[in-house]
Image (cartoon, rainbow, N blue to C red; front, side):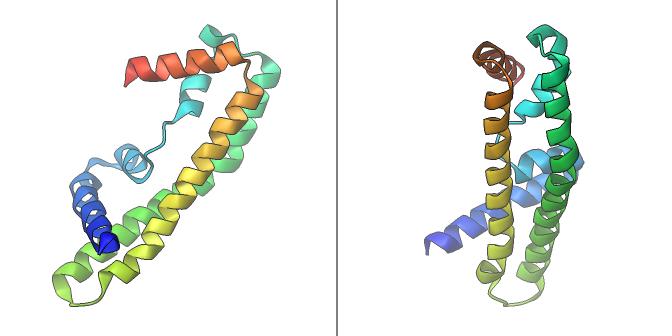
Length: 137
């Protein structure tokens, strides 16, 4: 029963956000903060050196295409679930598992990103990234 409620809640929330474009889709598919963007955009303010920046950019180069594909998959799966809910009596809860698994993968990747930031930046730089993130939210 909890899975049904969760799937329906996710479905209802997701439908209202599908209209807002890719940036909104990323936020929708991903509840984790985008700390990498904050770090890179504020590199001079944070005192990020060339070696640190190279590590951050390497992470982005490897991870961004993977993340974009996962976000597309979540959006596609949500659209499919929405249509099936309108057109058939299919068990959409079972089919929602694909979308929910992809969301878990997104969360795991964002967690790895946070760990990478913590190991690349100094503790002060990382704390400043969090402060900046909170101030712009």
